[in-house]
Image 1 (tube, helix red, strand yellow):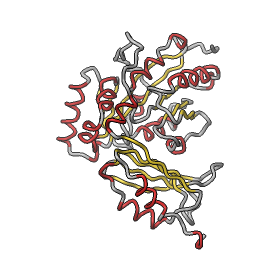
Image 2 (image 1 turned 180 degrees about the horizontal axis):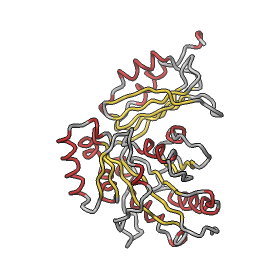
Image 3 (image 1 turned 60 degrees about the vertical axis):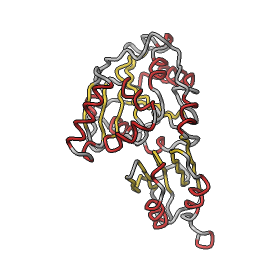
Image 4 (image 1 turned 180 degrees about the vertical axis):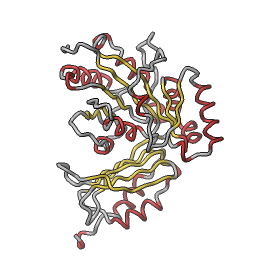
Length: 321
């Protein structure tokens, strides 16, 4: 398949919506070990936002969109990895990021495929756990528990946003669900990057079976989880976006994110909504990408018409452009 002498080390990054996967990947891409890291990104929804939020210095970010790699595009994942291996002499490490709604076990089983044997080395499954929204997320979907139980390393993110007593309760509960897992607490600004590149595999990942019995679509339908997408080729008014953020009905929204084109601003702006926390920050230059606003909101029983109408109110009026 390739001329590599050593197998390519691979780490899978899992975690529910808004847990900080992109922050960890950005830290990995700017590692101080001079490792050339390739990243495979998968998102829930028809458009990709994370692909533009990952601050890659090379072309090593590969997007698998409009499908979940634990279900419908596992063959695409296998093909993509083989393509990387064919050109892998320049790649030191591979990160596979799952969607926040993915069961990681089928992804691991794809990586353990016979055709990849001796060509890749599965180092770890890392699951990020959002301390600030822990109880809410645990109540939302079974996949959150599956992500935790499958992990070799559990990184409890946003640890600085909760009380120490709550953090201890979370750690205790995590070890109840996954006694073999290693638990590390962190803020989004200081991810434990050193652990990411250490082989810490301790889980068998259900290697005895390749049967994926998790019906992803049925579970999402049962929970009413869906995505709303808003795009606009026209700039948005900054103050209007600020007002929209303050008034967005967050109660039934699990995750919101977007890349925004704002009037009078040369840089792109990034919008994040996780739980009750919302932010609007400068992301960087548009580079070769045409300035287009793209927003994805994931939640249950979303009012698409209401969300679309409220965002249309932020678009700069034609008479003012």
